[in-house]
Length: 199
Image (cartoon, rainbow, N blue to C red; front, side):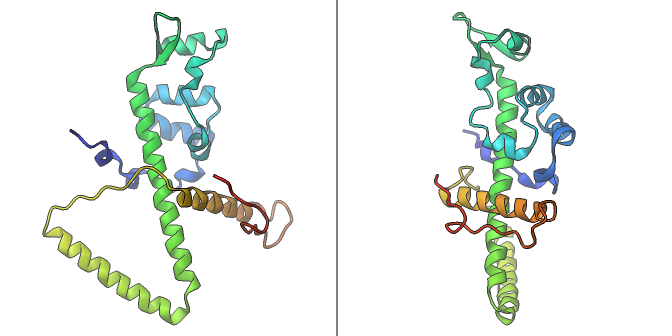
């Protein structure tokens, strides 16, 4: 059976993907998942990656009873005999792929942030030594993996720690980006001191 995880390659995403909003976000979605995915997101005002990833069920719109949605449902779904709608499978496949791709990107970013925080907390002399030994180990791992055809895949599900890390990173980035607008210098919120996360 084909492993769909092999299709998920977050390296194809633009480096600024997390900051795309509105038109730029929809242009990206159109390129990766098509016009129908854009319609699905636009009608629900899902206008950025964070909004998409925080939406529990992007397809729930198909279950809503509203004449205002009939045109959308008829264009992008099928009406069943019981008068309910389901989204067309191609649209669902494209949106699910995009969702998995973005989830993978967030997971990778969280791991990089975690690693860089660890490196920043160590003394400068140790950091240099650790970096060079890590580089050597990485190079050796790459060289040895070139001689064998080992394929590794990453889990697409975020652990609780990864969710918390993502929330903390997002909150800290928001603080950095808004401290001047709010006229607060060194705005920093500390988990368990200023807020707590319950998942």
